[in-house]
Image 1 (tube, helix red, strand yellow):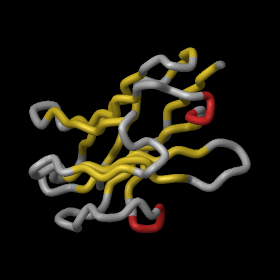
Image 2: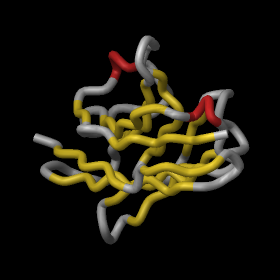
Image 3: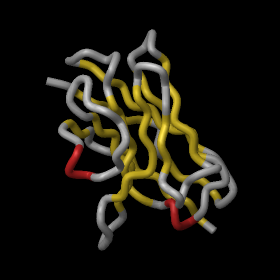
Image 4: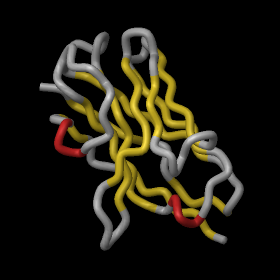
Length: 126
């Protein structure tokens, strides 16, 4: 069973930066698709970025492309989401999610992810 624990959320002013972390445990880290989703009240959970732990290839939603970057530290089995040029519209609960071992990483659809963390809140003020 894969466990995901997010950290790094907080409050920041517009234009600022935050880095979220997702510690992955309980399963094989390599060849795992890990993604970041976000959800604010009244809206659907939105996929924003993925990273495939073997090779580090990434995928981004258009809404964050050029501002957010996903990376990893394989020694720590941890995935990061660096968020720059934050906007009030980025305010949400951010979740880390993972797919089953060996499954490709070409999707930001919520239903394609099996394992979920508890989330970390990001608040951006104007």
